Image: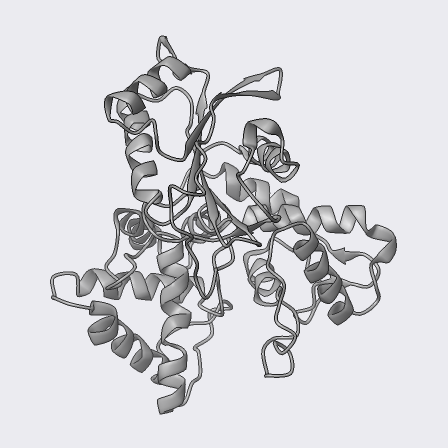
Length: 377
């Protein structure tokens, strides 16, 4: 998805939450944004907190060939295997044809018009979005069984500590073992990568060797720390850690310019912002600081608790369990994300790794963020 359709999406979600007639029976509770990192990947997913049913949203760019829109429709069928409903947002015109006629005819021809699928067409004029609901959702309550899960992931890419150098190393190893059979991440990539860390042959963000001592518990606990981000960015496949076409493209940039280069750094940063949806989260944090500017505290720990509450009330994260802190979990939901933004230069650092300014919050470096977004890598 190349454009920012968040304004349309959230206006539609607001209408659904208000139980407007055209969205009757869609939700019973309130909608919280959650993640779905399986392929084909929706652009947005929302969870009904009362029924545990989910609404997936797919957004289609304008000025694309017909096959592109046909593929979007085919993806909705696969996505509906995981979600209760799907909303597809398409441009007003597809080549020289009205999109509503084209999409609805396509759905009918494939006998998909009875699925719990809504179609919205959009248009942008003078930098203003307008949209129109051309196919309502069919009542889904009796058509689909309730779908539940024990855990819903956040909608943004999870990250712990992998540096851009280590991302390059992992991509290189995945390419090295691509011809092997089975779970190459477990059998080949991670064992060799972990040994490189033990030998001091991987680098931290600052270019210095990572120092690590071997421990069986550390080997097991850190395995997912390095796999999850690359999977969620679409650089690896989910099951075996095999490099994808997107991963090969990023690796090629690292091979040509070097993993320490600005080109590779910007390409990874852009993937984190767009594919990893960190730009969405940054905008929400910025909005929180603007709306609640008079409440921003002196201490960072209090700030992040207030931010958690704001994101919860806004439907961006689910309510944390009361035992989350007492059982040793992190004190606030948002913890590692600002650390990553600081490493990427998205935050104006205050020295010695600090980035929280008392009573002001996190000061984003929009010049750097925009430079990354506009980069061609």
